[in-house]
Image (cartoon, rainbow, N blue to C red; front, side):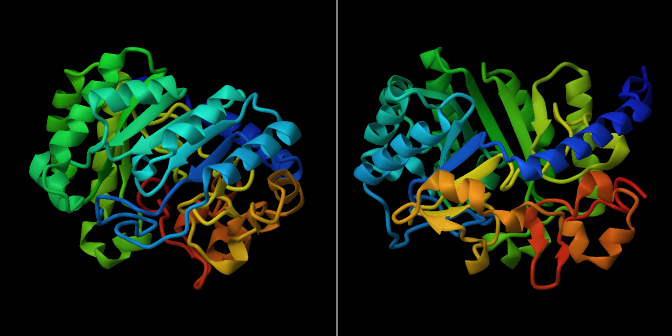
Length: 364
């Protein structure tokens, strides 16, 4: 059967996307916190070329356990814990020696939590400690085959440690979801088939395949960004694997048009920054998505002086709008109802234009 015959019905997709667009307007008025990201540190033992936050060996302010305890208590008191997922990130979260104390407390008061990690510090013992602290899900980064991964992350031995981490996590046998994530570049796109063969032999739950974004350090490496042909190749690869029943998916970013929406991920495009998603940075700033450019006007408050729920409900107006309203070409686009100007994290706020737009690449 050819792929076109197995694609989802286009008219049904348009109907579903229209319903979602209408729902999004309601969420703007009554936002629902579902994902609360905690950036526990900006320190990292890798120096990834694509890092949106430019993490590494940096001197950074880190809030103590007592502050996290107070904030978590306040969030529970004001908003409850049901339906809120704590998403733990960095930097590399495991560089915090009190990670298990912080997250063990979160577990004790009823929060579910998951983590992203480079995997280099996840020994069998650490994997068990993460389970005991309540971790339900984890995504470990593997950005190509060994030579490519180590060069991209500028960490000799990083690939082998990340692969060992995935196996250590699988061996625990109790996590809700163990995922590998691969950032695809113009350099490593040719390694996807081989990576699939490797992951297919492991008992991980899914493989998330995402494109390198023009943010953070990646701006210094434009030659690694995907070309139009690369994007087509990427989405065809994911769609084919999903049609074969494989747990491969694209990330949450970017509107893909009729052909690929719901073909490469389980949901339709919907940038949740400030609508479902908020973040607390390592220094306590309250922002939306951690990948969004760190500009003063995007800081909505700070947990050292502000109660999180008050900021969530009373501020975030800058994120509860359509970026397409800021750009004349976007306003003319027939897909703006579904795209809304695309993702906040890849919007150029100096030029007021999307840095990633698939018009002309995936749709007309």
